[in-house]
Amino acid sequence: MTQHYNALTGWGARAPHDARGQEMRELLHAAQTGALIGAAGAAAVHLHRMRDGGTTMRAAAADMAKAGATVAAANTAATAVARTLGGGPVVSLLTALATGAAVTYALTETPKAEEGR
Image 1: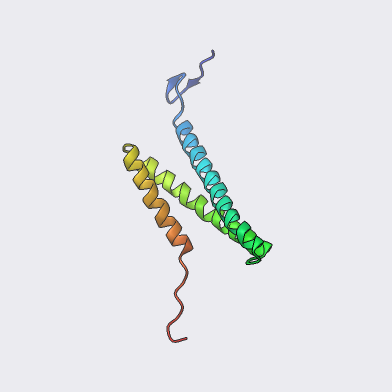
Image 2 (image 1 turned 180 degrees about the vertical axis):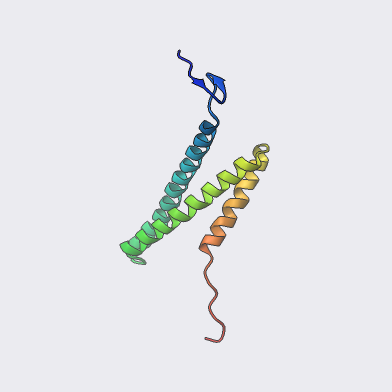
């Protein structure tokens, strides 16, 4: 096996930017996973509604895209915060749940109707 020399870290050692690249790949994977889960969940709900005539294909597709983007953002943020804070598995889980819930709440909040209308 050939070892490569890195001027910053010496022979065979990984460069510091490799760690950043790995973190970015993990965050991208979290976004992809979140988008898939969000869109799949919305699709499952809308399949029932479409069968019963309660929604159109266009509305279902728009909601699937919105749900996918929302869960992708929440999962990515949760992953980033949990990685940053570190800690054991329980701390990471609680951190990820709290961050994911906060991001989802912020992205799905509906504006309050103006009073007096």
